[in-house]
Picture 1 (tube, rainbow, N blue to C red):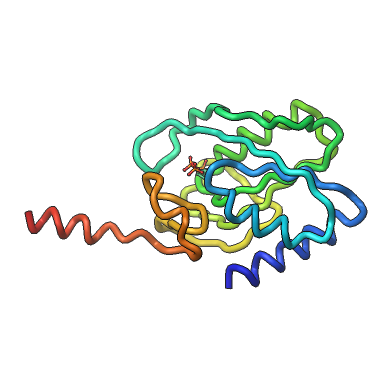
Picture 2: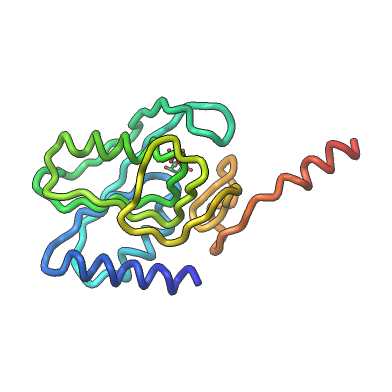
Length: 171
Ligand code: PRP
């Protein structure tokens, strides 16, 4: 199901950018698996780069304080930029990255997200290309982690906190 959807998304992107070259910017770390599959399915040329934004806060929620800890290295000015994300949650990370990149005068800027988790949005944010939407739940695999674990899993899974709780209850 994932590979089929990635092919569909790559098809839509290739049609929209026909005759142009895309600067694909992956948001580290989570996006690298999805991005690798997506760019190999494009039928338009692209250059690739990465950005990393850290959001400081407790546990699994964004605090809203975002810092770019690894910047894009290629020039963005005049380019058709496609930001690739694994997941949109509160929307704060992407809003921050888009605003930062817009200051560098790209020709266009769009977002492609593998997962759109809509329930916890803190601001209005719509990605231009979305793989799958979900309401809530903590997803791991296909690049997504929990405490840096599970990124390598080829599919996506909902993390079930029950086993850890049961363990505690059982002493
Ligand atoms: C995740 C995800 C997005 C961001 C989405 O990254 O990859 O970048 O959070 O959250 P938001 O919409 O609430 O801002 P994370 O900080 O977990 O880093 P990672 O990609 O290295 O796992």
